[in-house]
Amino acid sequence: MQLDDVIEAILNNRVRITDHADEEAQADSLGFSEIYFSVLHGEIIEDNPNDKPFPSCLIYGETFSGESVHSVWAYNPANRWAVLITVYRPDPQR
Image 1 (cartoon, helix red, strand yellow):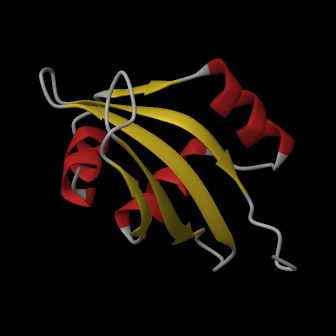
Image 2: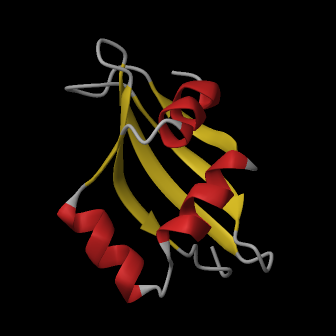
């Protein structure tokens, strides 16, 4: 899975957001424009090519104001859709 795949899906509105990701975004006061921004300017910090049903990755990025964001994405290469599985502000103590 490549970061470019997720970025291309975001830029072409081929994104599915799980209920869990939606709840976590609300809990951490993260808007989806901030989450997408963090991916567009982010980097993959963990790759999980054998995840099922699709490969996934953990992306580190920052919000508009420079706050850290972690987001987990799956990517379906057959239809080129990305799935936001979860998102959170990482604990600075970890």
